[in-house]
Image (cartoon, rainbow, N blue to C red):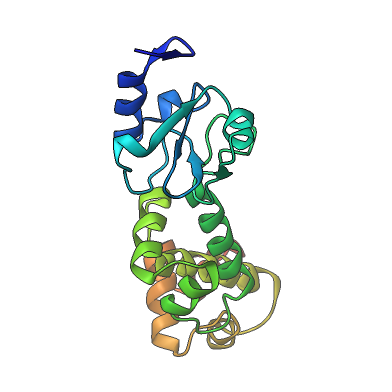
Length: 194
């Protein structure tokens, strides 16, 4: 059996089928029917074995007429490529820049180019919380800053940080800090908190 980078075709095929990131950079596979080449860790649909060719590097795959996969980006000269990293960073940036607006999840997902279910799942897997909880944390952090640096009352702070009602602001603030907005301000101004 033909060896490539000291790996047998069987080993490379198994790495391809299992999307094994340990083999990224050791070989690339190309699919004749699509004209695309990928990293072994690519999560695209598993091709038929008879349509696959293996290459020791990206340059050889491109020289053979294959184009790089848009999902796993084998043309980038990094050992591993995480396609979800840019989605996460774009989502975080979008939420931080628009935290005052009432932007539903489907709109955020549409703007970063994925479904809302997919966004919710990968965001929670990677950060430990949903985009909605992330938005709440951003808003509460901004509210804490306003409470400490301005003379705005709690209601004004709530509305300025994107909350549509006083009760939703108070509930979110207490859930994240353990204090009401007025208790937080009093505590940080050196006053006694009941």
